[in-house]
Image (cartoon, rainbow over the protein chains, first blue to last red):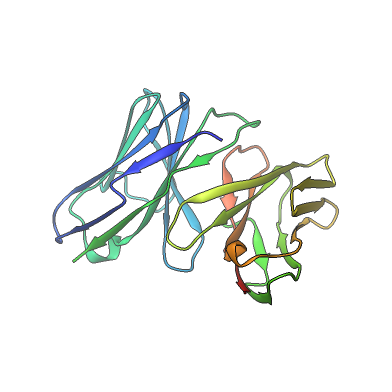
Length: 116
Length: 111
């Protein structure tokens, strides 16, 4: 299957700082990328959907000014957690897709964010 | 909103036994997918089954779909310790191609 990478794998930052997480599709051009967060022993909760070259669509309850998403190219999307707080500590997972109903999502390995 | 709900929440079996996990959903779907997640890792896609399909196989995996009952099952035959992971079903709520995940079933296979 297709490969999606995330960087970094884990990050520890101080409260109030901003953290950028990258999601790359390595062997295909992803029309659409998705960002999820997952709390321990919980399901994946969709945060936002981003299409290359356009603004991300955020799910209800997700602050777009706090979680900045940029999908500047067909192979790269970034999630920036601005002014991070301990409650933002979570496992963030991206996925990439060619989009549309006959899609398959390819998931990245996830990024563990810990805010101290 | 959460569409798929897996059952049981956790399952512990011995190596060699079969493991069955169920997923129920509420609205009509175009397809249903099963994923596997090892602890602290990303998701691995296992099987996609479309709404007009009733059963699919992939190696030791067997997925069934009953749209009349709005349910699906994932059967892992002859389980191995390496099958230990969380298994999620994901459905696309009618009209949306974005999958919605259930809470998952945590499977532990004891060697």
